[in-house]
Length: 288
Image (cartoon, rainbow, N blue to C red; front, side):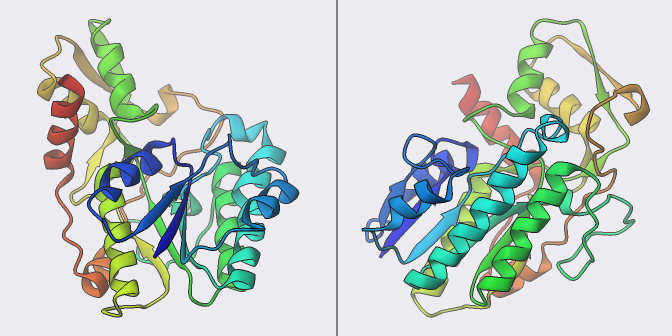
């Protein structure tokens, strides 16, 4: 079975690369900007012209949330336009698609875990562009999987965990937003869940296309996440809670983005670790 992964050098793509070694019978191809320019339909179609895959795991995205408020055209080109083209190619070549999306498709006004039936209402350019991408997939592919996730971090790439560890090693105090609630996602755990879905579909054990939510278990704030991270990293820095109002950003962040994982657990028997457990593992890898 042949699997193509876009965004191969990103956090999730890199973790899929690590895990691919465990799937000896699968033939993985990882691509990034060097192989395909997602802003150009011709580039995307040229790449697929002489190739055939069974699965496309589409991890690549424009994820600079604040920059997207100015860089609107580029955000939409990658998060919506490229997704539409990829979905069309999947139809033409009968490729199964797994598309990665985000909690930013919601407005953050919920007060209980958000399930897949909740109505999206993005409040940022990034969120709107990602929702457009979702809609292209849903309108073109009845057999696709969309996996929404949140607060992703990894030992690879740039992310909150690496930034906080770096800042905490240089400063005596650090202010972190305490009134935005959700759950961190260790990209390794998300990659593992994705490959469990691929295996289940390929082996005929389970195949229920549609939207799924995945983060680690538990609930926290960015402040509590950072406080735990600094303590576990044994860094001598005082983490202080601040409000969203005190930390101005170009894009509006969802204040509440706790995703309900019941569906993915029930359908694919995915075991999801608590965020603190996974963070400890990531810290150990970064430290070593």
